[in-house]
Image 1 (cartoon, rainbow, N blue to C red):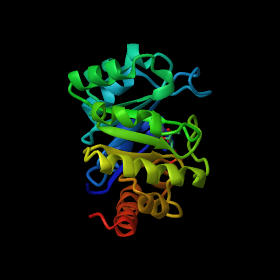
Image 2: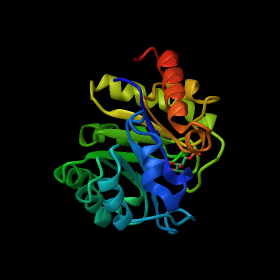
Image 3: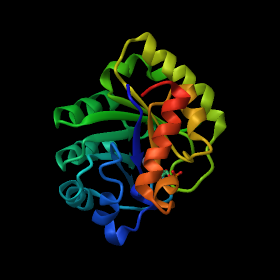
Length: 223
Ligand code: DX5
Ligand code: ZN
């Protein structure tokens, strides 16, 4: 699978979201949208109405990362609102299999997310239910945090699990991904990279997307 870059609008200017989306189009593969409810994480961002508007305004498909309680109730609505991918946190979902299936039934790709301290092995049998596995490389809630190298061995183990099952499941990393850290994550086996501050904090966000992609591609040997 080719390397993909998903800039996180958490680090963008929320008063100009359509312009910020356009600033990384067509270079970015996805636009990462962090939905936070101030319960699952101690931060509050945006919800369905903004995702609905952004899905209409942006040329890039939306990669919605739900950091919310009760994703079983809410996640299918994000797919219905036009997101191309909807990711729920394993520990927040009461019925992850049903929820992943409902996301797919609404026509979106279904993702499952794990926090840095959560092991991947218990989810090995669920690989067939997901289109993407998201391994957080910071504790979720805020942009601009430092990449947690402690997650690297888990990225390697997750890559082995996915490869051994011959599953076409993407392996995403989110948090602290930058020109300093993306090569380590790519070498470990990640293929979809979320980057907030490294893209929107750059003078040239589209150029930052291209150079992150080039670094990841050469580190991983993937095109
Ligand atoms: C953090 C969010 C990330 C965040 C990443 O909880 O899930 O998507 O925007 O920001 P950076 O790339 O700045 O660490
Ligand atoms: Zn995120």
